[in-house]
Image (cartoon, rainbow, N blue to C red; front, side):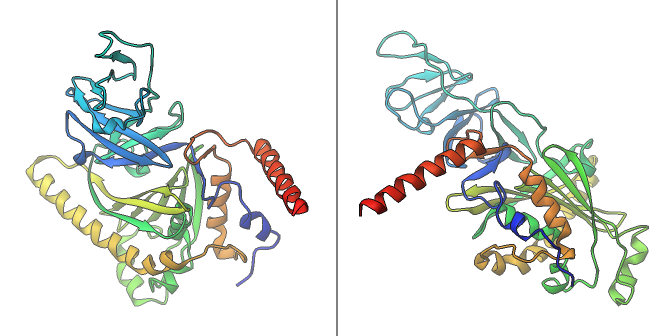
Length: 364
């Protein structure tokens, strides 16, 4: 297998991809919808920041920075009142825009406002836009963009590597043969959906010498359906299956402290009407889970032990290189502060750190 020339250094040392304290501005999952009822508030730790998310009595979702501006009490310990939230500690109340509307000990309000974040709901999951103003819609399956969907949030998982590394597994064409024993050569074609989403479509029929592929080929008019759509480098939707029934799985990941990944698996299908449609969708979602479990099982051990170091890209890794390029072009934020990364400032800061360290060594 031929190695790709003159690319090793540029893909081993990246500014965003596989960085333990940087992530892309975008939508990230916060908590399954079923875990937040009307009139309740939950604490959420997301990308190094503590949040309080509540659902008002009208069903509206609200997301604040977690700490009360009085003494720093966690607002998720408080109580939802109507459309607002009252802190447990001294009973200060904030409305859904974060404005302080009541300080009981003063009998009035104060001109204070909590930092609020855009929050939305889709596929049985509550999402937070990590950044100031949402620039893209919530992540979706391209094939189902214009359809109402049924979904099922299943297992939560933690992987011992960065979300970006977990994501590239789905377009690692070689591993389908070595890990999953699929007798099919997969070749991907890239398509840019928007600034934050990229699609990889399999374009091959393949498997001419495989009995299994000859058996299932009548169910595919063209290439074997296997499509991956990536959002913000950390969320992937896979579409696969015969022409008459496609299965859709979303793997929604977020970065944890230390460069690890925490994810939720979401099963998705087009909504079908009537009682028959309801039962049929339950069957489809169950079959989708079986498909997802099959592919996830083979890679679990690898994700627990991998120390990712992309030293020798090959021709088969072309889709992975394209994915890394796409990640590197997006807007990066810092862990915890959620502030934009300025590369020039980062270089100046690093120089100062190195100068201080060198002076300390000289004094020693």
